[in-house]
Amino acid sequence: MLIRRPDDVLPSEITPREVYFNRRQWMAGAAGLALTASLPKGLEAAPLSGAKSPFSTDEKKTSREDVTSYNNYYEFGTGKEDPAAKAGSLKTAPWTVKVDGMVGKPAEFAIEDLIKSPALEERIYRMRCVEGWSMVIPWVGFPLADLIKRVEPLGSAKYIAFETAFRPDEMPGLDSIFPVLEWPYVEGLRLDEAMNPLTLLAVGLYGETLPNQNGAPIRLVVPWKYGFKGIKSITRISFVDKQPPTSWNKQAPSEYGFYANVNPNVDHPRWSQATERRIGEGGLFAKRRPTLMFNGYAEQVASLYTGMDLRKLY
Ligand code: MTE
Image 1: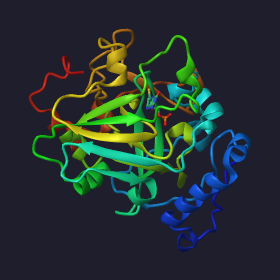
Image 2 (image 1 turned 45 degrees about the horizontal axis):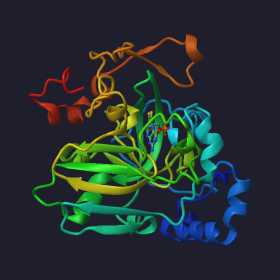
Image 3 (image 1 turned 120 degrees about the vertical axis):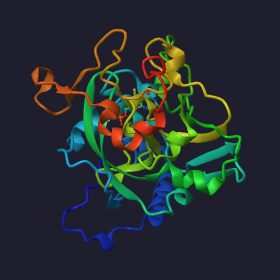
Image 4 (image 1 turned 90 degrees about the vertical axis):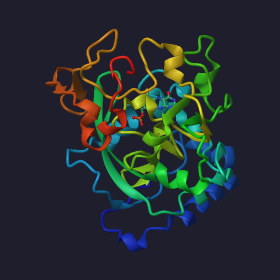
């Protein structure tokens, strides 16, 4: 069940997010499993808004229905509908994110503390999946750079490694006898990519907290990279000096590189990346759109890769 925000609610009437997160935690604790079981799509969504960021695209948003029912979250199965059907079993409160490694101030943040400051923003981003489809999603979140500054990285830190929760009891996909991926799901960014103002830690979409299938309670969003870099339900962020392993690269290194920058000129070994299908635009027979270099964000990010051979470092 989703509690939608009626259009006539004034921004000032929206529950402050710290209060809401505490309430959500309370709900989970008080009602426990019975509540979770009766809510297959996870705990109730709650309003979560932010000022619209100038980084937002003006393109037509993909419907909320499509954004929340066509997902990749293999911990809940490999079908596109599996996450919406099954991710309700993931308990997202209480939730902490451990930040460790090469930082001056390692910390374990409760999700409520993480989102207190700075202000949340709405970022409407084009998203492009390596499978050849794309969406336009109104995320709510804050720049990863803000968290990075809080923990004071040491000069030796060159990369950031991210890890998803590993909870076999709550994630039915982890039980498979033929695991698709090695768990937990891991991802990584170079520190300068992580610091780029476009890189977001998302805690909501469409003006509400993240549905579980989209990576509640906190996930990464890197709009110039293929969707698989957007690791969901993060529990650990580690600062390291070497390029960290990433799940899809471990699974198929010739198909999925560390960088994973959207690049229409570098084909996936089994299909072209030159065009894409925008979800919601007339199904399989709709005209495909040309894919843009860095998913259209070249102006902001191309300089991160100056001098690199992006055919080799795909
Ligand atoms: N994170 C985890 N933990 N597990 C996953 O299977 N799939 C990735 C990424 N993050 C995945 C994940 C892939 S392949 C994509 S395309 C995006 O999540 C999809 O995000 P969305 O469902 O919110 O659109």
